[in-house]
Image 1 (tube, rainbow, N blue to C red):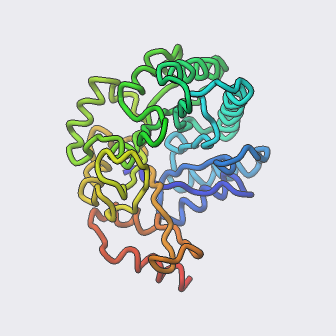
Image 2: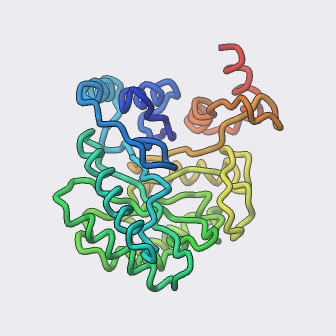
Length: 303
């Protein structure tokens, strides 16, 4: 099982990410190279990166399963403001170069939002931008994330993902990141995951799946809202998610948790604790822990 979670990058860069992942009992992880909401980026520290790579090897974390995530501010779908569109292309190109410096092979990307233009035009904008970016000599693969369909998001249907991939020139550098919450909210029934995989294989091809974001959902099927829930505490449920995680067709694919932090109590959002150590343990055991929320609070309040 290749299982991990979102971790911070912070001042110590990749080394801090590795240490945080290990503290959760993970054997992979996902990170942003800076805050996902802005463009502030520090240079990659070579010495710290080498130390991080060494620490990964010592703890059986395969760097080829580690995932970077592109920031939310990148929108390749809308080119009404050419300056912003060109900036998105330039900034994502820079993020890919940062991945190369660290030896990271995959970067997850939200395809983009049309925001006032026709979807067909927006999809072509994404294709154009990705082809421009992938003209660079790179070993990094861009993974299109399946989206919930909130607002004018693109990539919420397999057909839209297919259209983008079909028009990419370097198909060896494009892939897909499934998100279980997003798929549920987009209208794909995760309780019948075998049928979904069959549809995915017929439409796109299973070989394109390179990462899975494992998240429960606070929303019913087809809600188009994108609100993540902790594993087993949402509409999908533990049994559905554990079947997806353990599915033999995806056994070598890294699974990444992006579930919500837990407050001191159900109403308190001032002090928040990461759930990943406990969710990963529960997933490895294969049994739902009804007391997980209390266990998380007790652990962090006493340590």
